[in-house]
Length: 296
Ligand code: RIB
Image (tube, rainbow, N blue to C red; front, side):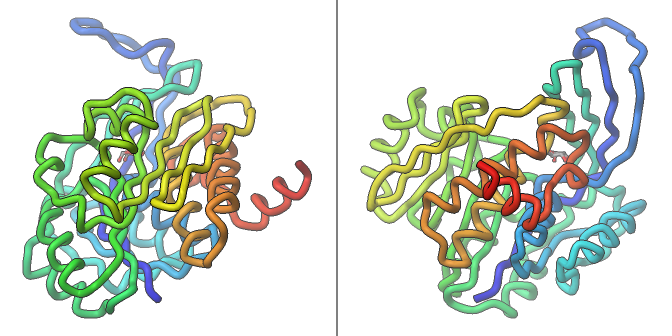
C-alpha cells in the first residue's frame, strides 16, 4: 500500500504582529521569516515524520527549490514533483501574540497542475493505495475521478473551503478530515454530531474527523464515534496544527492502528506543533510523540 499526497507547496512569508492588520491600517510587524509550508507539503512532512512512506506530487515553480529539498530531507519521495514556469505558490501569514494566524494565499505554481499530469502521476498507483488531497491545487475533480477509477482510497482535507468542493461526489471519498468551520461550510450544520448524521445519511461509507481546537477532535466511522481531548499546551503558533493532525492520523491509520490510537497520536502531535513557531518546522517526530504519550 502506497500513500500519494497530490498537494500544494508554499513559501510562507510569516509576520509576527501585535494584532491582525485592519482595513486601511499600515502597521509595523514585530519580526519576519520565510518558511516552508503549504497544506500539501506540511501534511507530507507530518506523514513522513510519523513514519509513513509518502510520495508528494505537485508543482515546483520559480523560487521553490527549497521546498523540494525540505521534502527530500524529510524522507518524502519527490519523484512525482513537476517543474513549471510560474512563481512558486506562497502565503502571507500574520501570527498574533496569542498564536492565532490569518493567511493570504497565492496559488501560483500550485495552480499549474494539468489533467495530463494527474493521469501520469496516478499511473504509478494501485487499488488500495491512499490519495491525500487538500484544496490548494488545480484539478481536484480530475484527481478524485482518476483515483476512484484506480480503486484508491481518497482522504480529503477540504481546506481552504470553497463552494466548488460541493460539486465533488463524497461517495468517492473514504475520509474527510476538517475543522469545525469547514464541517459547517460543507454540511450547513454547526454541531459535529449533526454534521455526521447528515453526511452519513447521504454517503454511508464515508468516515470523518472534525477537529475542534481546544475542545479536541471527534472521529466518526460507520462503526461508531471516538472523541479525543486536546492535550493542554502553551500556544505559540497554530499554523499547520491541522496539517500535523491529518498527517499523523493517516500515518497511524495506514499502519492499521485502532481509531482511538490514531486520534491520540494525531492530537498529541498537533498540540506539540502549536507550541512551536512555523509550519513544517513545527511538526514533531514519531519518537517524540511516542515518548510524550508514554509519559501521560
Ligand atoms: O495550514 C497551514 C498552511 O496553510 C501554511 O503553511 C500556508 O502555506 C497555507 O497553505
